[in-house]
Each structure stands twice: as structure tokens, then as C-alpha cells.
Image 1 (cartoon, rainbow, N blue to C red):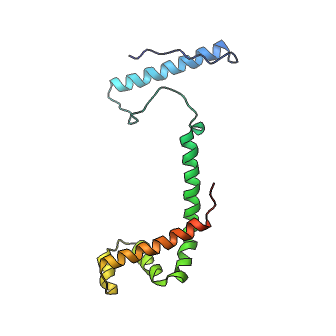
Image 2: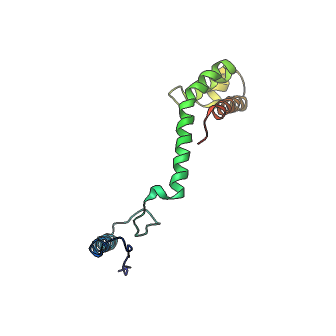
Length: 143
């Protein structure tokens, strides 16, 4: 059994509230240890007994920023694909068949269909993806 370290909340908090808080923390630690003894394993290897507001952590802010960028890029994707239709019709057709056909299509199948090698198809798809990426990056608003 782990030894519980009493947490002082400061001068602005009443002694009764501090005792109740520590009582709840001790009980939660006891529950966690009891679960551990009885074979209930928590999959979080970095489990620490602390109550932390995760929204104040720098990782959360960075994740939130990444999520905003990801959502914005995802919203721009249909416009980028539509723009690709006029910029590179061949690339548009390959992207549509390879990614948006609803079934998994192999490069060899596309290569046979268009009479080129699968390396050529792979390169053309990569070029079309690069055009899409350039469009999306040029139209996004960085947070």
C-alpha cells in the first residue's frame, strides 16, 4: 500500500474543505490499489494520482491547435479535389479511382487499365496529392 501525501490547498480554502478533498483523494487511491490487487489493470502506464486540469497543459493547447488545422484542412479537401479536376484532369481521375471509389483498388489494376507501369501510376498519384497539398496549404488560415 502506498503512503498518501496530504495536500495543502492554501490559505484561501477552509480546513473542512481541505480535509474533505484529501479524504476523497485517499479513498480514490485506496480504490485504485484495491483494483490493482484484484487484477484490474489500468492501461495508462503514466498513471499518477493527481487531479490536473488537462486544458491548461501545453500539450493540450498544441493538440487543440493541431485539431483546428486538421479540421480546416479537411474542410478544404473537397474544394481542392474540385480544383484538381481543372488543374490536372488525369490526376483527378486517378485520385477519384484510387481513394474515393469505395473499394480498395491496387496500383497494378490501375496500371493495367491505363497501360502503364504501377510505378508510373504511383508517381502520378503522388504528383496529384502534391497539387492537392499545395492548394490546401495555400488556402488555410494558420492559427
